[in-house]
Amino acid sequence: MFDKIKKALWGELSSEDQKRFALLSLTFLFIIGTYWLMRPLKDGIFFKVVGGEWQPLAKILSVCVLVPLVFFYSKLVDLVEKQKLFYIICSFFSIFFIGVSFALQHPSIGLANTVTSPDRLLGWFVYLGIESFGTLMVALFWSFVISSSETDSAKKGYPLIIAGAQIGSLLGPTIATQAESLGMSTLTFIVAGGIAIVPFLVKYFITVFPSAAEKKSEKSTKSTGMIEGLKLLLSRKYLLGILGVATLYEVIGTILDYQMKMIANQEYADAAGVTKFLGFFGQATNGLALVFALVGTSFLIRRYGLTFCLVAFPVAVGLVVGNVLIFPSLWVLFIAMVAIKGLSYALNNPCKEIMYIPTSKDAKFKAKGWIDMFGGRTAKATGSGINFMFTSLSALLFYGSILSLGIVVVWGFIALYLGRENKKLVEAGTIVS
Image 1 (cartoon, rainbow, N blue to C red):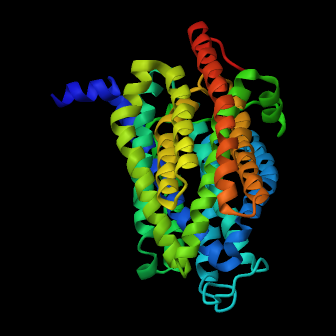
Image 2 (image 1 turned 30 degrees about the vertical axis):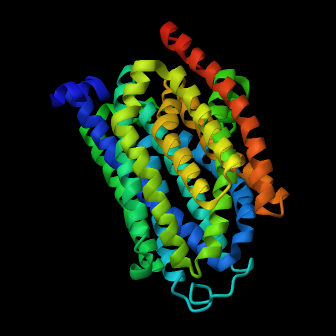
Image 3 (image 1 turned 45 degrees about the horizontal axis):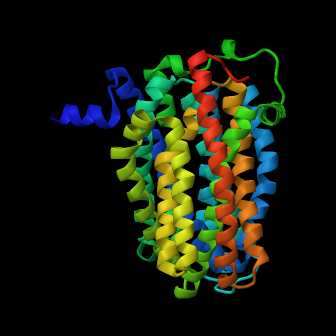
């Protein structure tokens, strides 16, 4: 009976693929688990050190930080094997968060100082560092996965990776809900430890599946340049379609997310309180995504196809935004954000990543780097710019929802085009390069 249920929900995977995707799932569990522990920390620290009214500016600045970061990442892709990117990047961020852990204990620059000010650099460093980690590591992981995947196995195995990620994204916020008892410095040290585990998991994966490793002899003898990913992105309609599907919902999510967090900041007096609330939000979001990933993602992709799933997400987001427009309140916003984030992680993200399979290595690593890093942050900066335009939450709730519904319409047409184009590429065996 269980085998029949498993086959219906996730399809048939060989024993080798089961092990492959299980190891990838465990690796992504640590990446996403630590990131979802960072997210409540990021806002809890920033709101109580710098001030919540500066958060939209922080999101805009994150785009400026990511421009040189994307160039540096693209250069690393040319210089080192793909698995070594994990070793370098994870080492940097692990050391960074160890430093943050000690800084939070400092009597003047740390949390003991309860006076908020935009001059307190620690809050900015923490915010921008966490934003950069989330963007860079998730993009790197999926580039690593899709570079060694086939479309058929991906449809069955990717939802298992997502399920593992959602377990991690439940554990992270659950730890964050203990902020008042553990302390913010301890939580940040746990983040550093979680990041440090990732390179060892990647090394073990390469040992078990040596074909997934990139050898020096396999690397191009001619560097394609740091700007190659951007050139590819701007010259290929298919990649521009992925850009739209990957980023447009971020504009909508940023608008709703800011409204919810500003209200939460008014309700809680200290950073630990805000962190605890956002930890609960993370539990709800990722709980929904986990259930959907386990019982819905693979089934929907295989039963109805990628085009249906790509279009279903903007339709669902449109319904949620319409509900916020009609019933604007804190708990409606909470439910709206849970629905948008949960469906994004469990439905839109695996479909989006499958879109990269019929593309070249430069598209998988460099163009994808621009899309996931610069594109995603630009979308969030756009949402933050909209937040800046309105001086009251009531005005933002109304006009922000109207703008969001307009974005949904454009997004839906792009998703439809992308799904149909992917089907043509796979059937013809064509690679976008």
